[in-house]
Length: 201
Image 1 (cartoon, rainbow, N blue to C red):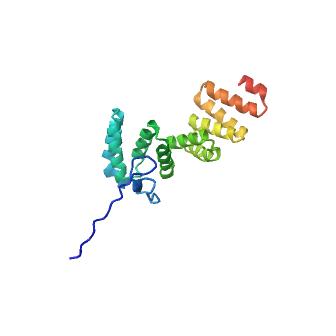
Image 2: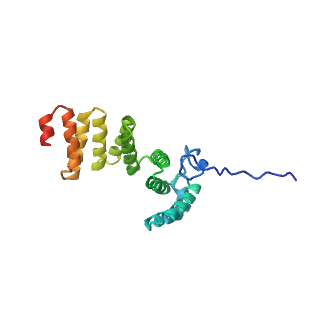
Image 3: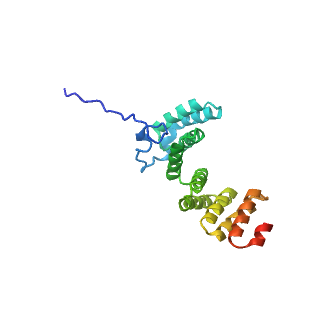
């Protein structure tokens, strides 16, 4: 009888710092996302990880989350939890990779779009930030935060008139006078040469 060598499983951890195996992280092929029903068996594991995190048992939550992502590397809640853990732990490269993965695999996830747009904006990647900020406004047109972020991005991109529109829309939606938002609007108006309006808000 012919001897068959056992299949070797690649146990190397991903270089991004996620603590997932590379084949379940940056070396994985995410071109085919399984349908939602395929994820159902893993949901109790994910819920356990989320409950542990709510109880501030972060180390155990991380362990269970990694187990879930080993079985279902595209599962949104597990990816989101691991992102939060890596972000809180200042593992910036892994957090960035995971956030981008969430947006790529689940493009209608509003909080992730906002987080990614803001992160890119803070890094000076304004053109890329605009793509995600626009998607956030598309998904949540009645959300003040999405308009606020779009106002920041458009002002920085030297399109102050569009930025002004989004700042004013954010003010309408907040139903109040947010001092930081008003200061940003004033800066926008100043950039347009509308000094008197900038002073009065």
